[in-house]
Image (cartoon, rainbow, N blue to C red; front, side, top):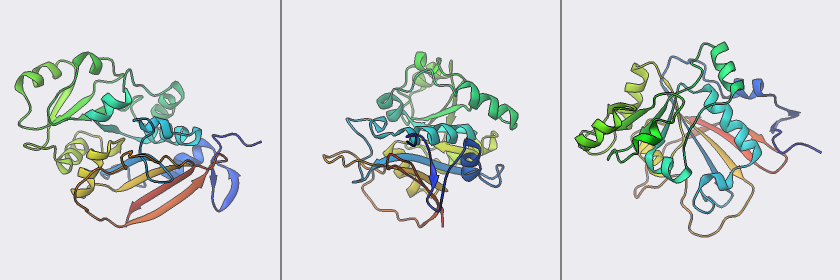
Length: 247
């Protein structure tokens, strides 16, 4: 019986190794700024189960999720997602850290948390494996900024709202061109509207969720962007792992 974490190309039956998967998701020019978003969705478009995206995850999705983090220079996530999904004490496992150092990368990619208000708990940020970045705005509270600067590097990008164009530019300038974004839906909507999304990795979880769960994009206005299918993988449990790149 096939293991649930096995992953296959839709055009070839053989199970893909981690090295083959890493090669499939790798960007040709690592020095070029590139923003990859990663989400999981039910068949009927729900982005969460019982309020969290982890409720939709499959073993194959978790495997690819870990490999995408392995490839990243920096991991970007919205403060709401940090709170909702319980981001704490985050570090890549030993095998991932070893692979990264062998491939010329830092053992642990830093996290960059996006928050217009800077309403974060310093003690939570202090628990990260690498000193994180916090991306905020000119209008954020000066008092909050002083508290956060004790445990994180604060980057101002935008006046009242975070400017993701500036976010992408500043991170690349600091030596982190390969950006891996883990949401949430509001931040992803801003990224689409501001034209910074180069790639979307989307896992379709084999379930119908129903209800009123959010989509992977939470926006009032449509901002269409054409994408091209890079590859499509499948897993024995019925998961589809799709990679789309900017057309």
